[in-house]
Amino acid sequence: MAGQMLPVIALVAVAVFAMAAAAAAKVPAMYVFGDSTADVGNNNYLAGAAVPRANFPHNGIDFPTSRPTGRFSNGYNGVDFLALNMGFRRSPPPFLAVANKTSNPLFRGLQGTNFASAGSGILDSTGQSIIPMSKQVEQFATVQRNISARISPQAADSVLSRSLFLISTGGNDIFAFFSANSTPSSAEMQRFVDNLVSLYTNHVKDLYVLGARKFAVIDVPPIGCCPYPRSLHPLGACIDVLNELARGLNKGVKDAMHGLSVSFNGLKYSIGSSHAVVQSIMKHPQRLGFKEVTTACCGSGKFNGESGCTPNATLCDNRHDYLFWDLLHPTHATSKIAAAAIYNGPLRFAAPINFKQLVDDQH
Image (cartoon, rainbow, N blue to C red; front, side, top):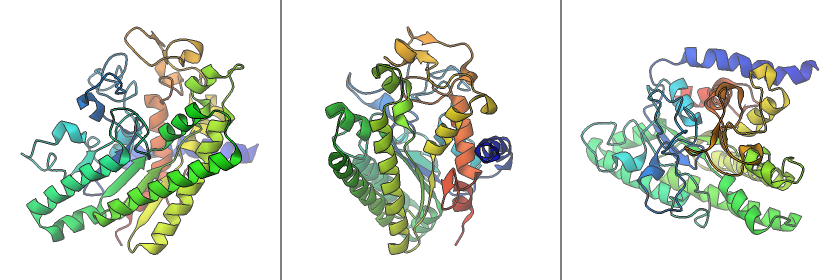
């Protein structure tokens, strides 16, 4: 029992102290890549009915402005809290919101940019009418060139080498694979995971060539236990295949990042385990302040997981009691705990070092 309590105690401790430790920004900039777990509004600027969006109520109900921003959350997402933990006043703006604005350092990308796009994945084929990871890297290349042109290539190299590059992606690729084949063989699963890891590795290499050195990776949580997969299961249980694929991808990325750190001079990384954080919350919800860990706060149907959070969806009153905001995404409360654990928590939640140690490393 004492051993089981340790992860819970660690989560509570880091949640209390991490925010207090933040002061001035500890890195020059933060550049964010990924999917809806990291999107802060890029998809608001994309055309097409198939684009996943969150720029309508009840999303954003607990955001400081009480307005929907494009975040799939009732308030902040994990990127927001990580930025605050690093000492930034706010997380970096969406690339598409500032791409044509060059009047100050923020808009020039010197203080960071968010390229994440909801619905995207590691594969170009994942999602419709969104910005895949490969395109996000291309968008960063335009920012890198802009910075180099304005402050000199040498100065740009210095800024980027000390900045944090955060990646949170992979879940949508797994959902797409499962949708096409819900009963894959072990060999099919392994081939799929190997392909994802290979492409993920290439994306990291491309960012390295562009000047990135510090990589903060968020792994894939146990997505088979989200309200949407539960709504598909006849007994309302987690879908094991999805969780197995998530574990396989996480292990592959872990091994790949270690290999890259050995092969590429100056490359440093930390892998934040949203997987371990969510598992801890699901095992010990009340000890961490949660009362509901299977049903979404906002949605409809079984587990409120059959459709997304829309103005007509069922909305819970006690949002801080819920692990899940909608059919797939965490609440503001969950993101706060997860970010604190990943930023300044023990090896269980971030390895081989935590995000704070990565940020503080000046070598």
